[in-house]
Image (tube, rainbow, N blue to C red; front, side, top):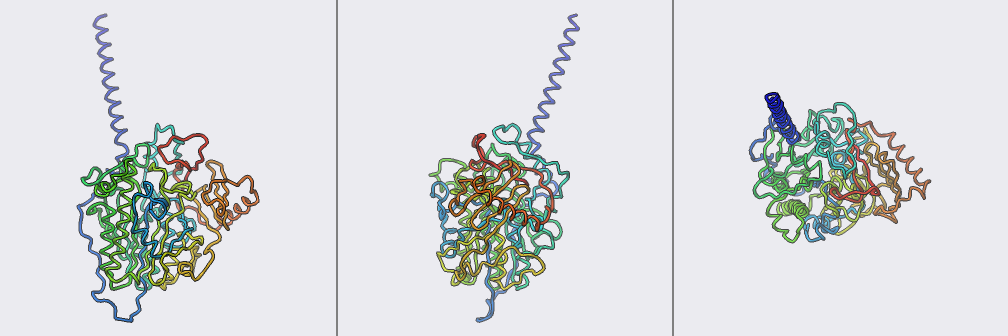
Amino acid sequence: MASTGKGLRGLAIAGALIVGVGVAGYAAFDRWFIYLPGLIQDLRDPIGPPRSVAWQQGPAEAPAAGAERPPNIVLIVADDLGWNDITLHGGVAGGTVPTPNIDRLANEGVRLTNAYAASGTCAPSRAALMTGRYPTRFGFEFTPLPGGMTRVIEYTERGQTERRPFILNDVGPLPDFQDMAVPTGEVTVAEMLKGRGYHTVHLGKWHLGGAAGSSPQAQGFDESLDLAGLLYAPAGSDGVVEARQDFDPLDQVYWAIGRAAVTFNGSERFAPDGYLTDYFSREAVKVIEANRNRPFFLYLAQWAPHSPLQASQADYDALAHIKHHPTRVYAAMIRALDRGVGQVLDTLEEQGLSENTVVIFTSDNGGAHYIGLPEINKPWRGWKATFFGGGIRVPTFVRWPGTIAPGSTMAGLSQHIDIAPTIAAIAGADLPGDRPIDGRDLTSFLTGTAGGDPHETLFWRSGHYEAVIHQGWKLQRTARPARTWLFNLTADPEERTNLAVSEPAKVQELSALLAAHAATQAQPLWPSAAEMPVSIDKPSGVPESAEDEYVYWPN
């Protein structure tokens, strides 16, 4: 009996060891699972060391006096910039983080006070900026995500019971990330301008496809320095400060798979030479200098201030009065973005190009809820990934010295779809005549020679969530939750009072507009793979209650 007992004890100990090793192995896999996509990409496409970018050089001499030269055009697009992130609208940390250069651009030109993004998320808005068409018109309805990213987000979200659940739709295999693209038959503003002799340069984020026919160079850009990672510098770098938001599954994914990398004209990935925002700004200066003697179009698509929150130590140190660490890091990112705008404006002046250069500034959508900062879109409700004002009201300014009056405003209703037609008109380029162009040339509105609104009606759609603004009224409706919001924007621009119950005739009128618009749009090029819950009035990291209004954003 004694030997039998010892044997049983031995088996129990062995079994416990096996279970322990198995649990430890599972825990290790559990910890490393989210890192696998980034590691696989590193094997397939390693990141090389920083290298010099050899921009094509334009003519060494300026055109002869009196020679026709259409205006240069610089389009600067921030990523996830909140309405309240610039001091012109209030500013981060109670306005204690100045944005003098963005404010200068606005004050030296025209402010579009009723301007909207084309979508609540980045890529569809960028598709509209490039084409002048609603992204839903050609099926670019959802933001492309790398393979498996929705699964990884769901994985990291487990156990966060204070949140409504992240929904995965059973849609089968999705196209490869690089194949989720603006169709090759679409005509971009860069292609329009090339017909007028412009040298066209893309610098920064693209996110509109990378497969054959959909890269920036295949879509009309002569040169492209493209974002190829999600970080501003390698994680843990000297001279860089980070703020990780453990409550946010997206943040966990970014840190796990993110890299600091770019590509030039389709090259292998290589590291940027320094903090990413400053790097892109320095390269933009080089582009302007290289093209000072020929007409150019520069599309400067900064990654800032999109998460993950990562700033230079110097910018962080300059904001010691901000005690909340994530706010301070975010504010430092805004500081770098603003500095880059100033470098562009200063270079145009130094090269004698200011008078003949149109500078347009906007953001792809509003500030994101998932960074956990409460007032970035103040006074508007909502965030990125909603159609409330916080998701689609974007700072938009246009400067053209000698043509646009400094300090002027344009109150008419406009959207990202108007940017390409306006640029084409300024350049004397033709719009494609074989398809509907949803945007309008805003030139006469920007210069004050036309009054009224460029549009009386604008539309948005992402899956079952859609919105319309028509003659001062705004309708939003969504299937998850089954909800309709109706707002009188003239009386209630912040969308505080839902009139859907008291104004059924107006709901019916605007619903009919949505239905008629939907009948003219294309089916999505790929299905919605996931739906993310977004609380309208609270950022991530703040406990939610059953009474909180929310939407599910399909993507």
